[in-house]
Image (tube, rainbow, N blue to C red; front, top):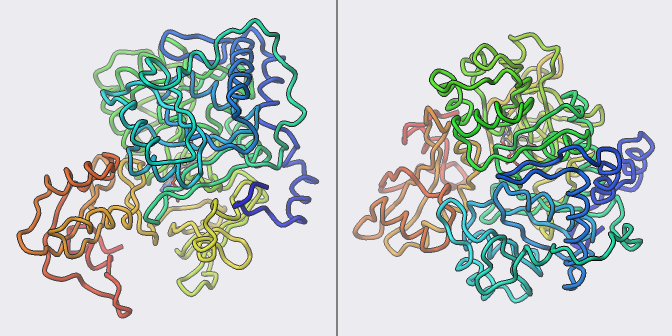
Length: 540
Ligand code: J2J
């Protein structure tokens, strides 16, 4: 495995192989097989582009050749920051094919996040779109390139400005498609990196192997009964694990279905796409589900093709869950997942009560779940505690993070999820809360530590502590508590300060509470529980 990654113990890996979970295939090779089977079927629809499997496969080959010609190959990290464009899908598979490793940045990330990702991964290339949602990524790319010595190339989809054109990278060159390279990646190798929605000051990288990801995707697709008639609408960002592989884009392509890319999440655009393309499956966060539930009241679109609406990434309240099936005339599937691995889904044969009140059960019989108290002891069945997990598609360590790994995993290799859950008698997970210091804002994860570090750098801030405040639409918003140094800063000043530091918009605090002191725990740390109670959040 790549330097800086932690492999599964050998005997565990052998067991997963023997059980047929890890099948020794690679993502780049799989696309070739899918294209062989479904050559003339539509694989991908985005904007006014409509690509068959054959066209996608050929484009991926051209891109792979272009990458190789520029010296990008095995184990090279490439930070990809693209919105939901067909280029994202083609580039990902081209990188898989040459054994280079995409790092999934979010379109919302800015200088602070991107410089960290490129620097930490020692990326050789960075890929952006020229503009998206009113933001020009080229000046950002200039700053990133100046800050990260390992970056050799910036590729731009659209007008490249001073950088290299992505279009040229995959331009027809008259050559016949090469066979898959013999020196391509192995199935046990890292295929790409997802970002943790974690607790540390800067996002950590999650290595996912070809074997482990293809297993996750296959298991999820089987549960969702994905077949060649499936039309998947990618509403959430493609780099998100939920959209990419639960079963998502890859699961649907593996079955010969079609993937339709949405560029916005609003009900008008998405309902139009559902009607036009006959979408059968899509996945959203609870905040979008809320907006869509309102939307069905006034938007006159035929949504009858929709069979399943997956909702996950933040807690879905039972009252909202109960409205989904009657409103959309489709099945609700709750999804509890994490980029680190473990994926839980509710099943088609659950009754309404169960579907609307639990977050699902693990997709693999080999997923191991432990629920423990703060001392690490297993709690009695039905009691809430922190969820620990390991299994055939759950990481054993973050990339280049020895120190953090020492506490993020227990001595048996179980990943500490930081989620407070209860297991029901039937083996379903119910999410009860969180022990990790993360705010989940409409499905986006915001590390409290990260925001505290930025706010704490303001000259009129002595100390900062970040907590969630409840919000009817977003679930939670970011609230910053500040002990000022002299004249207190205003919320607008703090936001402008963070933006100036290159912090993504979705992390900016939306509430400011000034304080003289913070409540402390017995160990002298800021007592976030009591702080939450003071700022209007619940204690729990
Ligand atoms: C409550 N909290 C949830 C749920 C995730 C599928 C779906 C989502 C993600 C994801 C993902 C939740 N109810 N239904 O990777 O494959 C919170 C938990 C979890 C964290 C992971 C997937 N579903 N969560 O959201 O890596 O706190 O992955 O640990 O972004 O989201 O965040 P992330």
